[in-house]
Length: 391
Image (cartoon, rainbow, N blue to C red; front, top):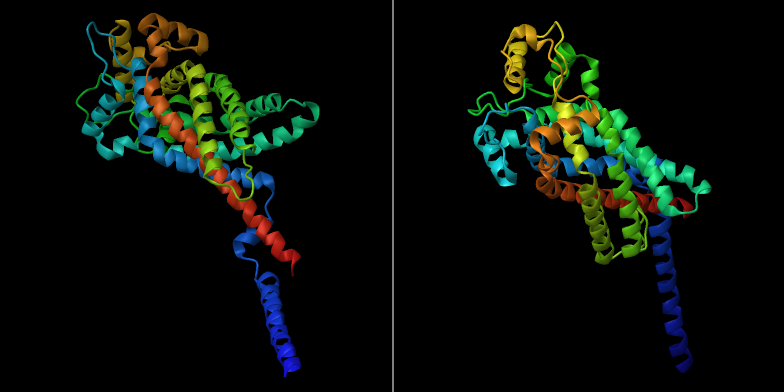
């Protein structure tokens, strides 16, 4: 009895052990690779960067569009309103500007230019993160200092994305700076009115020519100093806070990792924006300035422009004169001098408070989304590879 009692449990344990082994084998070997895992397995690191960058830009654009509109209004109004004695600015401060936009244009006005924002952010960040990663891979063998590698890579990536997407940003800036035709106050009205992104592109091409889409390109390229400060600072701070580089995450990350990422994105954006903000005002003025009207411009269009520039320079409002107007802003240096002479140094920081309230959440949203998407894609790819290895 004692012998039977000792062997009986062993006999009953053996089948249980076998069943567990077969269950484990089934779960690891027979579980099919999902479509998403297959998709991720077929993608390269550059593809991951492009997808994560586009997702980050898209999310950021949706969340911060109203603040972008407010910032653009504040930056651009000095170039539109006539300089009459005692005249007050139409837009003043974040809340005051928001109130004017809401009263005159409603919710639609707060999201004016959302189309080109989406069209712009998707390729901008997709190109930027892709080129940034590739540049780091190319430069690293020739330079041991990671901060220098990040600096040069950010310059190359910024130049690439700026050249590709500048026409979209010009359209975006113009749509945001215009006001509704129903608005009672015309002191800050630009000399155009566009119904949509496509309408803006068509009218700009017909009345100003192809070069209008590259207005402000030089200060936009000068703005590469912004990304040259922001992203190397972000990578440096993220490594300090989390021990991981951009787009990288250790297994078993906790909330501490995301807090470190959040802190790095906020601090790096504040530093970069504070150091390079004046170039944004110069860029906005050049982007929103009308180029000399072509013969195809309508009489109403030219008359409006003649009236605006005539008031600004003390000249009569004549259609004939409108076609021969010398642009107020001509290049970075002359634009800087004109703004300084007519409006003072404070104009270079117009909308900076709003810009901080827009840029910091935008950068944070972009980077957190980018990091999250990169982590998800890399984890999914690893799972697919593990399943395939167990087949």
